[in-house]
Image (tube, rainbow, N blue to C red; front, side, top):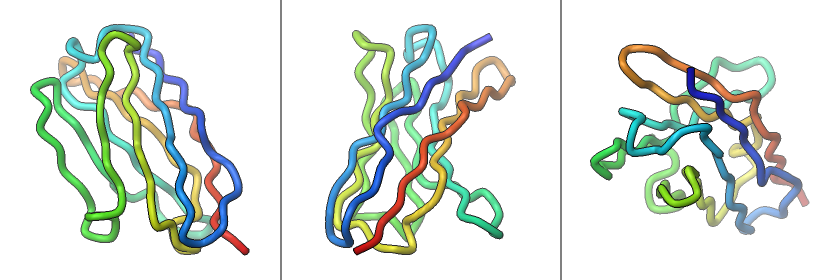
Length: 115
């Protein structure tokens, strides 16, 4: 089973940037899709962005043009570059891997956007 570890969260001011990392225990080429989700207090977990093993990407409308998902297979890592952050982007961000029909989640990393 794939293991995932997220990192890179923290406190940032509105308009700032953060880069989240999702480190996988296997080559990301062996994972069908790696996706980022987020969950704010009192809200449901929501999709943020995804990348397939073929390099195709998709984004939630709320982050298009501000967030970029990318992969580095040499490091077994998927990144989420977040720019122009807003207070409403504050949440715990989770990484999810889908491989051979099975889903694996990481434990999440907290992102707080506040002045």
